[in-house]
Length: 141
Length: 235
Image 1 (tube, rainbow over the protein chains, first blue to last red):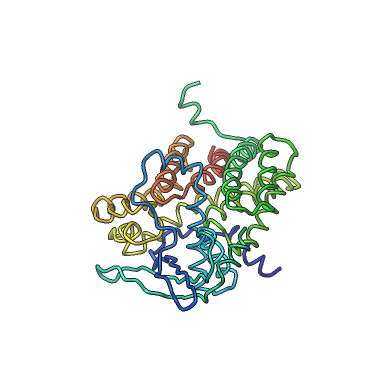
Image 2: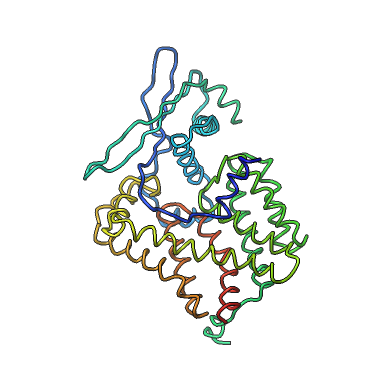
């Protein structure tokens, strides 16, 4: 009950500090592991190179993929600020859902981008334990 | 009736609540359909049904209370907002509307709507203030960073805007100044309507650049409360 109250309170007494600072920004990368063979790290759902005007307008009404991606950004930030199994599960399930069925395990890591001087630097801040892809696909079905 | 007459018109508390419920039924239905595309039927099918009921204007306060309860369940399901500020605003509007419906007297109903109106003004003013006190925003670097490496730009092509620092400096200051002076628009009904039009344009641009479509729809839902508040306090 206390937990629910703690989740509810910031919605009725919000801080409204949008973009107060531009904090290091998370990206989710994943790889598939099969036995001893570890695949290369790949960015989860890379954004398109270009979006046309019509696509942008259509997204005003229908934007489920992007909104899920924003939720995964929140989960990534929460995982660093206050680690929880919920955030790990949400990322695992949603990354797995976007992948074709297969054997082996899925592992993800969180890479944070930030600016130091004029350079953009990448820092790996979290690496998950591998989880069976089949079990994740089963759970997200 | 001229355009000026329309812009000068206020709303009664009942009218404001009516408009908010119609707008909210659309905004929450839009969110729910997006969720249904990803699964989670247990929560979002009932949510969608309640939106339709509320949009049709039947069931009195029950659909509002039902949607409030489901929003609470969503907070638990996602261990916080699914979509950051837009989910917070959805919950805030539903909380204030729910309280306005159970208010024992018109005074308490007005208090609930006033709280929402004040929070709406703060959503702009506080956002402007926290940017103003940050040197990176004042120098225009923060907006460059948003485009350069944040998770928000909807395409890689948009990141090229980070190479236009003068343009982003002007845009950054335009946003800061607009957010800071927004409360002054409460002094005049026409100024308020024009400010709300600008604010909607601001949310629309955020939706285009950063994919924040839900923010656009849900902030519009709170505008009737502010139009009523302006008329009630300054009218």
